[in-house]
Every structure is written in C-alpha cells, then in structure tokens.
Amino acid sequence: MLTEHDLTEAIAETLRSGFTGFEMTRVALEAAQLELPSGEGFSKRDRVRAALEGKSRIRVAEIARDIGRHTKNFNLEELGLQVLEESTPPITEITRRDVAKCFGDDLSGERHVVGLVGELFPGIGSVANGFVVGKSLAEEIDQHMVRNPGDWDVEYLFDRIGAYQCSRDRFARLLAAALHPLCVRGDYQQKLAGEVSAVLARDGYALVRAGEESSFPIYAVNPIARGVAGAAKNLVFASNGPKPEIGFADAINNDIKILSNEDSCLVYDRPIRRDGLLWNEVVVWWAAREATTSTKDAARTLGARLQASLASDGERNFFNSYFKLYRERLGDRLPALVPQVYLHYDPAIVKTLRHRDGLKRQRMDFLLLLPNAHRVVIEVDGSQHFSQGGTPSLALYAEMVSADRELRLTGYEVYRFGANELVGPQAVSTIERFFGGLWARHSIAGAP
Image (cartoon, rainbow, N blue to C red; front, side):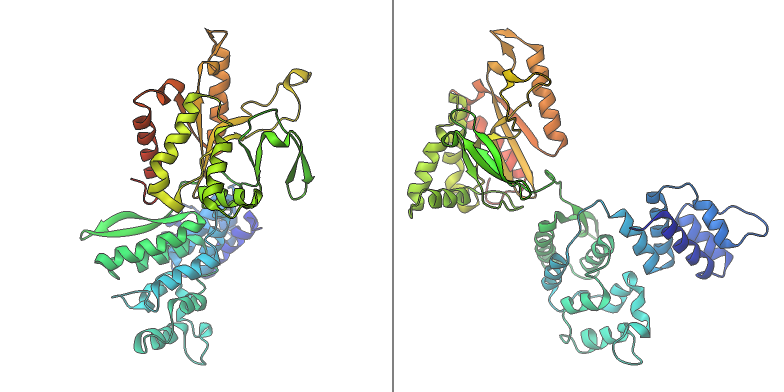
C-alpha cells in the first residue's frame, strides 16, 4: 500500500527534476494548492517534504493527482488516483474490454485518435513505448487506425495504451472524450452511450449527461446509487409457523442448515446475482425442490405456499395485487416479491434472555432484491406496530423507527404502508402508484 512517504517522494522528485523554470513550478503548485516554504540552504526536494509534512495520506494523494495532471506526469497522477480510488468499486478489466467492443475499430469518430488518446496517455509519443524499432506508439496507432483503418480494433488499442490497468478516473475520462460531440453526434452518439452505459452498469457505473455543447450531450461516468454492500447468500423466508432453529453446516462458507422446524420456512440456497432475484428464478428453484417438470404447476404451488405465510388481509392483498398487475407486464423480468424474510436471526427465545435484549425486527414483511444490490423492504403496519393493548406506545414507535434508520444506513430502502391503505376500493391504485414510482426509480424496463 502506498504511504504518505511514497507519495511525498514522488511529488518531490517531480518538482525537483520535472521543471526548470520558476513560472512552470509556480503554476503547478497553484494547481495543487501547495505552497513551498522558503529557506536558504534547502533544496527544492526538502522544501516539498516540509510543505507536505503533517498532511493526511488522502490530501497528499490529491496533491499528487493534481500536480501529475497539470504537468502531464502520468505516473504521479496515477499514484495519487490509486490511493483515492482504494475505497471505491473498480471498473474491472472484463467490463473495460466489453466497453472497448462497443466502439468496434473506431474510438474517436471525427477526431484524430492519436490526439484524443495522447491527452490522457502522454507516453504514447515515446519511441520506447512502440513495438516497432524507431517508432513511437503514437506513430503505430496512426498507421494502423488512421492510414490503415481496421488493422487495430479498440480492444487492442486499449491493451497497447494501458487502458485496462489505468485508474478508473482516467478510464472514465477516456470514455467521456470518445463520446464528446466533437467525436460523435446525433442518434449514433446516444446509441453508443446507451450501449457503453449498459456494460458499465455491471460494475455499478453509468454514463450520465453532464452538460451539453451546441445542443449535443456531454457525458460523464458516475457511480450508480448503490445498495447494500456484500452479496446476498442465504434467503430464509415464508415463515408460517414456529421459529426455525438455524445452525451452520459450514461456518467458513456461511452455509446454513435448518436444525428444527424446517417445515415452517423456506431457504433459497442458490446464488443470487448482483442483478437481483427474479420470480422465474425462484419458480425454477421450487420446481427442482418439488421434483416437478411443470413450470406452471410450480408457480401455482409456490404462490400458495407463500400466501400461507402472510399474516393479514393487507399483506395478502399487496401480494396478490403485485402479481395481477405485473406478472404479464414484466414476464421474465418480474422481480421476486419475497414474503416474511428473516433479516436478523436470534437463536435464543427472547423471554429466556438475561443479559441483553433480543435482536429487533427479525423478519421483514416483504423483500425485493433489485439490480445493483438494491434491497427494498416493504412493511405493512397494523396497530401492533405502534400500540400496546389498544393504547398508543411511544416506545414501540421509537423501536420501529430506530430499526428503519439502521436498515437505511446499511443501504436498504424501507417503505411502510398502513394496513388500512391495502384494503378497500383504493388499495389496488395505491399499490400500482407505489410500484410505478419504484420501477421508475430503479429503471425496471418494461414497467410503466
């Protein structure tokens, strides 16, 4: 891991040897908001060290990035970005290669590809970076992509310039430059941006309109609003009887085993993709579990089993309306609406505890696992959520909103319905209005 010392020495070396003119050094320092102390008998390297002393690792990384970018020092800028991107999800090489394939053999459209690439990868002008003796990489790119178009495709170009290993920031700026209206415009620009954005979404990023020029959009790569960190591993749901006793079959792999009351719940034990969990995936799992070859029969019996876990008319109406409204509209893209899902699991019976309280909100009424690790919790609140013996209880209410806060802070979305909203003539329109907004928020295709 890069330390403050590593970054400081890299900055000091750049400012010591990279500039000879006072004005150039001054402008570079202003770009990084860094002021060197004056002093007789001290070298510029020592003055840089003194200026950076006591600054945090992140601040030193920002200074390295800014000076590197201003001076076109690729290595220094990448060192700073390496630290600044440590806590953010990467754009993987797999995704970068698939992005390259979207461009085919033309990265720059109406611009000269060497000029576009050279702004972000200044090393291509060096003869040392070319494969052919006496030729720079820039000259090779010109030969194989401009004078002889089609010799190289963009996937190979990215390999040669280092676009698969560079920082996420540099790769994002490369895409923004390639999609700038100086390169491509009109319908093709929007089509290409859509294709690239769909690939980036696998890693949690998307192209967004960051502005416009001459009425044409300018794009930037932004992170998609992310859901819960970590992968979903065990889904224990549809509880309709005594609380199951759960143990680890393999604690290292986080494999669980139902030790007792197995019949009172279901355990979906297949891998859950980052794109979420679909209803047809649960039906296929149920068909295998029940040893039936009829998907239609599996969907019917699974629906009946899930309905058996619902505790109120409001929950039943919510569940049934969901499938009536969206099963045909969304077809194979319908997210699974999973009822009575265990969130926290406390192996002890609360009344037997002596030294602590039981875990709060052990079950969720409904859970949707949507693309990009978004987990949507839907609660149907009867009077038991805020009153005790018919008397309003601030303690119960506080417990409920406290549990909501904890869920939201870990990335869950929590939506509550009063039970009376989900019964009566207005219930279906209420449910449809809710899901219309939810589908729009999460860009669920085909769900008006």
